[in-house]
Length: 141
Image (cartoon, rainbow, N blue to C red; front, side, top):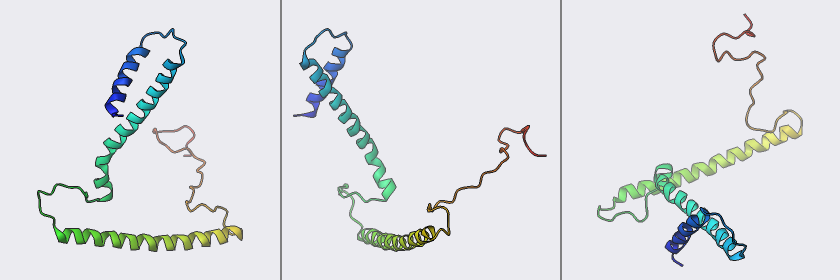
């Protein structure tokens, strides 16, 4: 079915729900349930459409279906493909080093030489309050 049909159905149901319901028919509640699903899907599609313009900025992605009014620069295309290959190679190398580092941390953890298996170092607790708002009565002078 056409999506515009569902949107008109949704608009009709919104108008219907504004008034108090006195019907005990199951068809009304089935229609309301379907309308809620339509609304949910509509907002998901709306969100995806609004986020689609962020892809080229975030991933330096060259659009596959771009306007063909301008001539394609072959050098730019080759540079971009080389950049992708270099990044893939670097990612694999980083994954190898990270795997080795985590294995070493795991071995140290199992030998009880370190207390935390987490790669993130936690800050030590400071017994004095930070002076965020000027003078503090508890500050050690």
